Image (tube, rainbow, N blue to C red; front, side, top):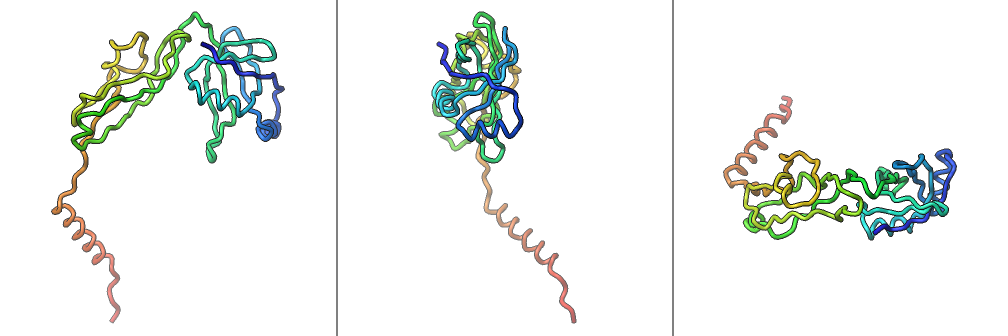
Length: 209
């Protein structure tokens, strides 16, 4: 299912003109890709933000540019580094019959045995890069971590036979791992205190006679 977004063409302007658009509740964007010339467009900021939040970044959007409808996906989002506000978005037009490369979130499910034992679940890889037809793009990819024990991990190769699309990540990439907690013994803590005392004693200036 495609989600429609209304857009209008815009002229390529200066930085001040883009700032003016944002001040008036508009979102500057650009549309390019399959069977489409690069087209600067502008969308309603609130409508776009609400739609993307509801359906997710991996959805196929139908961009309606003054009556011309183009199927596209979100290709890039530019944010203000200080405020995190979206400043500009790129839409990539696509052929619904051809496979495309997209990144989808990886969501761990279940309560890992290692976590129950006090371990910490870490997730080095949070997105999976796949090649799939636009109509078959999943909202996310789930990975069951229930049986994962202390010191164990799951990698991309553990997902290969469980999905219906081509995974482009390296097989050896670790997705999740259970790390044992760091434990400090009383002896170690005492050594640390002594080291701090030695540093203080060494750094103290000599008294002047």
